Image (cartoon, rainbow, N blue to C red; front, top):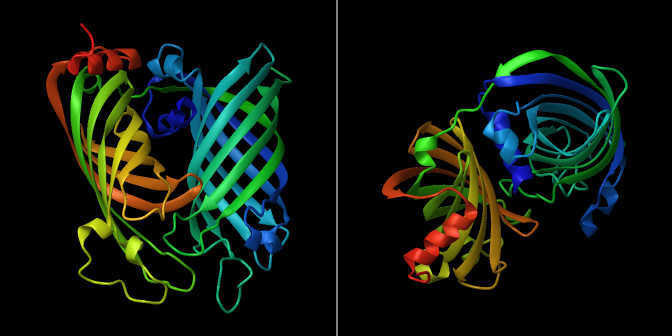
Length: 377
């Protein structure tokens, strides 16, 4: 949870002393054929990657809560040996990192990055049928890595890394198996100058209970053979409890309108379906890191009702929020069933502060639930 929450640091304005660390590295690895239909796409790949990150000052709450985080930007180019079918991928995104082990001259860190990638070769029914993995040129990026730094001078460090890099489009355009790469990297890290940055904290929203209502819209394709888009909608109702000055827990209910349950390949979607055939109801629990005007959310939902067993009993979701006002947000969210993407949603939501003052913390949240339900004296 904390590793994912680091991403939000990349999106905030900071005002704390931090040092810029610039890294350039070369990487070698291969594209992993994680599905039987992708065996012909497996190839060796090479990558050139650069990043720039800042470490948060020890005086800030994010330093304490997220275990010495760093944040910044990442960009790179991946060259596939199979140029005919796989082409190249250019990517950029937000990077967050936290230390797992640190001594005077050595450091081991966990990193996560999210952003966008552009693929030069995608599936085409006439010219590139072999690329059964990529249906869109623009795809989402997710990278998780382990970094090892050795200082070779006061401002320079040698860097070795291993990371898993994923690209896919959330079923907006089929096919959507995606590319997964496993890379080993070597490079140099250089510390440059000083910069003053600090995240804004909304203490007024982290001392009371908050009620939240959100409306979302999404669309997806089902198969390569049938390219029609299916529209989705959902409504979410949550009660939010503060964990810290930058984090909140949430629980509530999501109701989804999902016409994929009545979809049949190469046929128009039937009209006049009863709501019980296209409606999902789920109990959901989740978490949000919020600083400045941005938030990062993660959720786990359990279906209380679904028309059929077509989908798993549970789902996961991760998303980003923009708060143009303190109680109003715009959001994007990826809904996933284990490792299979369902669809991407875009939404708007409103939050209402209650008059109930509460104590921060996960345990205090459970105590509040017990007191509210009369389970504690």
